[in-house]
Structures are given as C-alpha cells and as structure tokens.
Image: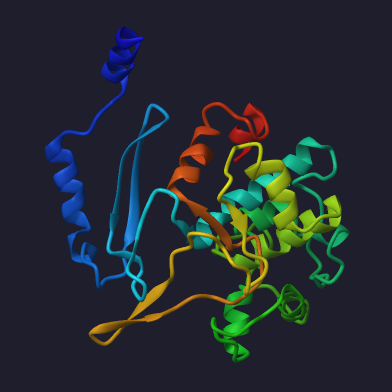
Length: 273
C-alpha cells in the first residue's frame, strides 16, 4: 500500500512553490478579511491539485472560501443549457435545426426561420432580453419572471439581423432554449438538469437558481464596489438558461472531467458542445 501511494504521489502533477506564489500574487489585492474575493482551483490529470480562497465569501459574517463554496457562475451557465438541449437531441425529441416556433409560438414570425442552432450560436438576430428589460425599467434587484421576459421578446417587431447572417451575443437565445427544454421534456430546466446532468456527474452542490428566495447552502455573497467600500449585489431575475447555475470549485472539477470521460451524454454530445 505504501508503495502504491508513493507511485500515485509521484505521478500526480504538483505546483512548485514558485508557481503558487505567482498565482497568489495575481489575487493579492483581494487577499484580506475585509474584501470580497474569489476561489481558485487548479486541476491536473483530473485532480484538484491546488485550491485557494482570496478574501471572504461573506464579508458581513467573515466567512472564508472553501472548495465547497457555491457561486453564481453567471453566463458560464450557458454550456449547461446547451448540454440539456443536446441530451434531448440524443433522445430523439428535437433537432438543432428545428424552427423555434415549433415549440415557442410566442416568438413572432419574422419571415425567416430561426432554429435552435441559431439560439445556441448567438446568430438568431433576436434582441437581448436583458437589454429590453433594462430599457423597460427593470433593475437586477427586482424580481422578474420567465413570463415577463417572454412577453417582452414576443412583442418585438423585428430582428437585429436575418438569422444566421451575423454573430451577436444574446442572452435571449439561451433563455428561449430553456423554455424549449421545459416544453419538450415536461420538466422545468432546473429539474431536468438535476436529473440528467448534475446527479449523473456527481455534482451534489450544483443547482439552477429558479427561485430568487431559495436558500443555497454555502453560497458566496455577491458584491460590487461602492466608493472605497462594497455593497451587496445579486440578481433576483428568475430566467434560466443564459445564467443562474450555482456551483462550486469541487463540482466544476467533475464537470470538466465529463469532457474527457463522459458520464453525462456521449462522446458525440461532447463533440457537439
């Protein structure tokens, strides 16, 4: 057993002291108790070989970061929604080249077909719902629902460009794709992803935040600068797909591993992603 452990230890990559000092220096400005900060993890050969928290996950209560601290990962969530769509493709329940109006008749007929593929590649021409809601007077601190976002999208009289003609980053595509997952699977995206993605991958701390008032164990608080200090900043918008995944460094290691040895989906799904 000792020989086996020695062999594993010798084969597992390690960071040198110089490496860790260089990494820590990047985040030095946050590495103090009174500062909001971040959590870093280095993965090599599938193993988490270095983790370090800088600052505090919660400044008010002086809570430090750990590899199990849960973060709202914002738009990085889009890859999880794409996985849900591709799982339904593998199930034979939809095609990436389906017209979105097949599932979402609320989307106006603009005289050109918008496909699910357009939604996932930011080439639909649909206007960004976050911009639309901001122009309509909503703030991130307000509670907004998927129904309100869909209503705004459905009342747009035109596209920014013909589908497939240009690339323009759009949260609308991924939000609408989340509704397609719901209508095709009969389950909300949060339930579908929990069943088909998070649990099979062993991501026990990961979830979609589909209820702004839900209690999320070990969640870090969001902050933004306010003069020489900070103020709490978080979104209460309940739209899914374009964002809203809550996860940890420990679970992200498992998510990354799925690209090399899929437990969620197949090699074909990984290539499609």
